[in-house]
Image: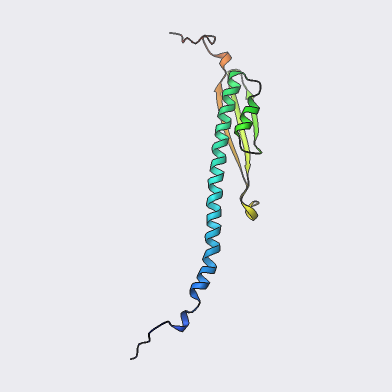
Length: 131
């Protein structure tokens, strides 16, 4: 039996074909991973904006919605609901997908924060706690 040395003729071009299939898949995966990180960062900004807005509204600041809007991602909507003893701030923001996937991967992010109103706390705001 004779052994052939060198390349087999039937394997020619397989690496090129595999690369042509794998490379777009890797680019798509990398794009989706980056979009996931950006969406997570926008969600964190929504949570922070809701918390900041709730603190400001609990103190009785008139521009609490503007304060929350400044901390929120672009295009976010801020809603403040006042109750008798609490304040509830809801922040909603759109997060579109990358490039041509924008229609498929669009999600709506939201966060809610609730704080006790400072003007209704026991003790009248004197800084002392009842004993």
